[in-house]
Image (cartoon, rainbow, N blue to C red; front, side):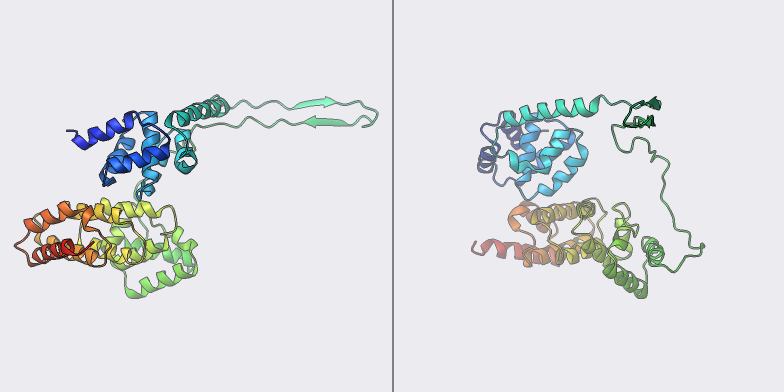
Length: 355
């Protein structure tokens, strides 16, 4: 069922007036806090339920917020080439109205279609043309003009690849492994996804990664196996994410925390990670909400989550105003536990503090 606020957001996006910059100012005044509204826009963009003009306005509003990183999902999801261009640099359109941006999008689409849309796969190879130049200056030299074959054009880069046959690859420990660093790294990492590695192996990996950043990229770590690493070797998981925090893939690993099954190791990894890497309070709020939902009626997890939230609030890595309702409901529901009672008292103390 659509909420009243979602109806207001749809109404706001239906006919936004003025430039994109002015639309953002009106949006901030009308929706405060704007976080839930931006979440709804993000979902609507993924579900593809907005018109082209509404998508432009929604993308611009998200780009001007702390949630701008999630536009990477939209960039890889959309097939609209102009939309990709718009996401790459939305600030250059801040002084334009939505209608003007749409006109430019139409022109861009026509140009892109004319330049690339009519190319069709072909295996026809133009024949070699040979002719004789009988010229006084060349003194009767024979020359040949070789025309290259027309290349096969695919609308997508990977149309010719079939990933359906790829399954989980398992490392064969019976095969003799060479002593080069990459082979050692891959062997230990494969072991780390399945069981806890010893201190010597973990120290060896860290030394290799500190000395050669390329080994991190080629180690075999991916978002798919990252949850296994968190459960089996949490310290190594923190070390690896810190190493890739400056790469575009960092947000793929970060988003895994919203999907992974909750456990003490997951909380420990996130707690250590947030002290070493700059993670927005908005994302931390989402993660806390996910933790609250997953630990219902699991007393052991409830205790861990209470301690985890208290630590975040104490270090100001989570703002009470972002998840106030959820935290109070969670603390009251579990008041029979000492940790939940302590959390409730901390929430009251924070509220009573002067702003």
